Image (cartoon, rainbow, N blue to C red; front, side, top):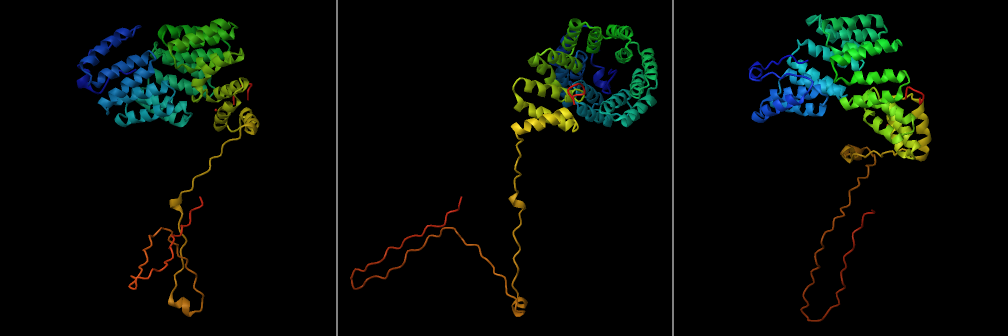
Length: 410
């Protein structure tokens, strides 16, 4: 994926990292380099790529951020960071980071293909096609150019053209696993499970660490009624990649259907903020909470669904019912006293008095601060006759009164 780096001076000093089926030797090798030279950003970049390839995205994120901290102007670092965010389901962050990479280098077809894919994920087909055109101009025979064209063709309903594009992508790069994924999905949708399984097995032979192929094998087995085998495949795909969300969703639905609500909620919980799964996952969790006597907690999940889809019948009916038991708390807005302006008093002028107009009464604010009264001065009694002087008492001051489901749940 990342074929080089613009930091030629640094790159020449780094022995190449050879990738194979086991990543531990690479990590051991890079750990030694980092220990000897902890200020070299390229070592962290190389180790982040290893973590990325084996789906350890949190470790990859930590290393690439360290590389960027040490060298903040390298386009490839931001490109890898964007890919990590994409795999973690953080599309907005991925898009912003990819544009940051573009600001350093705007003639990289790999980066344009990434931007095209990211805009496709947020359903901005116009910009997705714009970046695909840029990539095609720079690298017209790039395998992923044909791949993305196939994805766009498939979205338009032209699966015949899509199949042609995917096969062209494989002709350019037989080890590109993504066209195998898309072909497997198309043939499965055509009810050609055997052809779909062929592309699953071919793709897995190219990239055995790709969780999709194990997952989709489970989808095909499930369609044939082999439930136990399919669930085993779903769980194995999560073992390969702990962030492979489609498998979480399938396992959650199965657990919910079988009445294992605690297990189902465990699988749905990581999906509540993932665009592709958030609506259904929030609905499932809300219903689970109601079924387990936790209706008050269910309210927030139904609210999440309603904020995402205001027409969702299931959420609207549930909230109408639950608000009678648990009324929503309405926050009283705070009044900003600094924004309150005092009333403007009319000025009294000579013209006002001459015209006979009664001057407005000007009220003066009473000073309520306590002032210590001086003791009265009593003249000396020169006749030495004792006088009765009444006691002077102080008067008291006035005190202030003081989370549609598109299935049967919708």
